[in-house]
Every structure is written in C-alpha cells, then in structure tokens.
Image (cartoon, rainbow, N blue to C red; front, top):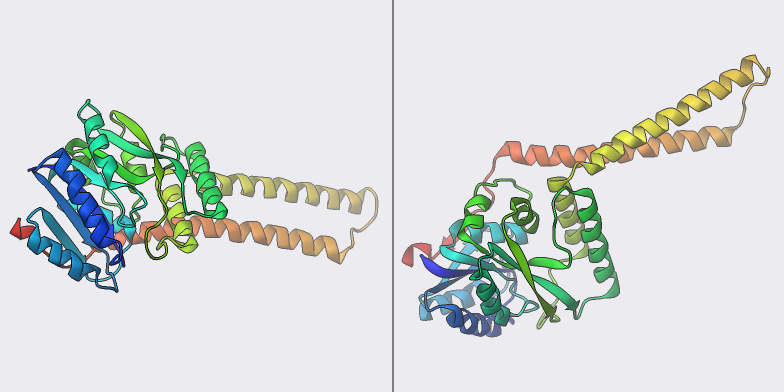
Amino acid sequence: MNDISIIVPIYNEKNNLPELYKRLVESASKVSKNYEILFVNDGSKDESCEIIKTYATKNANIRYINFSRNFGHQIAISAGIDKCNGNAIVIIDGDLQDPPELIPELYKKYKEGYNVVYAKRKSRKGEGFLKKTTAKFFYRILSKITSINIPLDTGDFRLFDDKILKHLRLMPEKHKFIRGQISWLGFKQTFIEYDRDSRKHGETKFTYKKMVNFAIDGITSFSSFPLKIVTLLGFIVSVIALIIIIYALYSKFVLDRVITGWTSLIISTMFIGGVQLLSIGIIGEYISRINSEVKNRPLYIIDEDNLSEN
C-alpha cells in the first residue's frame, strides 16, 4: 500500500509530459518515498504512451494504463480510481494548469483529519471570457438545482482518502461526474485556494461540445429538476389551452362571434409544438442514460498496463 497515489489522465500531452513528470516526481517525493504516479493514457494519438512507458522503465513508482481507444476524461479518472493503491489519492490533469507543487499542501491538510481536500481556483489564466462565464454560470445553476453541495470554482484537482476511494468504487454509473460523486458522499471536506495557470503547450481538449455534454451529465446525475420543469411546462400549457378553449366557446355561444385568424392559430400551434419537443428532448436525455446503464458494457477497455509489475 502506497502512502499516496497520483492519478493523471493523459490525452495527447507529449509536449507537457517531460515537465509534468519532473514536477510530479519532485512533489510526490516531498510527501513520501512510498508513492505511485498512475498515468491513464486515454487513447492518445501522439507519442504520449511511449513517453510514459520510458518513464516507467526508469522509475518503479510509475504505473500506466493504456486504453484501447479514447473513452473520455472522467472515464480515465475512474480507471485510475479502480486501479490505484494508495492511502491518499490525488487527481490532477496532465496539462500543467493545476500545479503539482500544491500536492504536498493538499496532503498536509489531509493529515489534519480531512477526508477530502479540494483545490479551489482563485483565478483562471489563459481562459477566455466566454469559457469563464459559462463555467461560472453552470456551477452556480448546478448548486441551486441539486440537493448536494458541490463546491464552486473547483475542478477534479483534489486529494481524498481511502474511505472515499472505497465508496467511489461502488458507484458504477456510466456517465461519470467525479466531483459530484465525491460531494455526494459527504464526509469531512475542506479546500486550499490557488491560482490556475494557463496551458503550457497545445490546445485544450475540453471543447465547448464536451463542456455541454459534461454539464448534461452533471445535471442528470444529481438532479431531477429538468423533469420537474417538463411537468411545470405541461401544466402551464394545459392551463393556457383551457383558457383559449373557454374563450372560444364563450365567443361562439355568448358573443355569437367565431374566432378567426391564421396568425393566432400558427402561434399557438408552434408554441405547443415547441414545448412538446423540449419536453421530449429532456425526457430523452434521462432515457438515454438509463439505456446506457442497462447495457452494462465495460466502462473502459485496457489495451496494456504495467500494474502487475509493481
């Protein structure tokens, strides 16, 4: 059993790996000589896997998992959670935006008796206004519509103990939202603030499309609020339709005036149709996730690893 395990999901990070490896080893060594750094190569198309293998031959504390294809960032973290072997576990991305030098501070805070120590961003360098704004909006909306307290301005960069690890391994859902799962578990949690750096090399792999999918996973995993919105919309539309029907009957039999008008007919039809499509779409997102769970396919496929060598 290692004192600390560091899980690092990797996707096309060959230019960042030399500096990342050096800084991770230095930071882990400050915590304990009994450490492991577990790189999870998420189907990289560059030479990332070969570079990681080179590090593993030089340093017995380096372990790696190589996926058969790209399964996604949260799945890569989940694989690390399944395969790591430490009393304390750190999750950190491989783009060097989160400083490895913060790991000893996280560990020191954990030794004070906390189950989870997460890194909270004071600033986010190198990110555009739109990305900052949408991220801020999403986390605050998520906080409002869920019954759990998901810390604001945090990512997956955090440390947690083996008690949290044990429970995370018992959460088998396919659409992962790791930070939400950890918050859902509860236990004693605290944070350390830091300034997030800009990306060292290359471009972010977290595109707006992935951000939207990630947001949908977070909302559908921890809130039924969208379904409540569907129910509310259905009720509102029904009330409006009832009012229109009553008015139409009143005009016909009391005022002796038939309601005419192509415009009003089209507007009402389009409005009701739009609400129906929106409702079907929201319900479909939940059904899609149920379908994924029922299939019970493996969360990921490992092509090769060196786990048995350590």
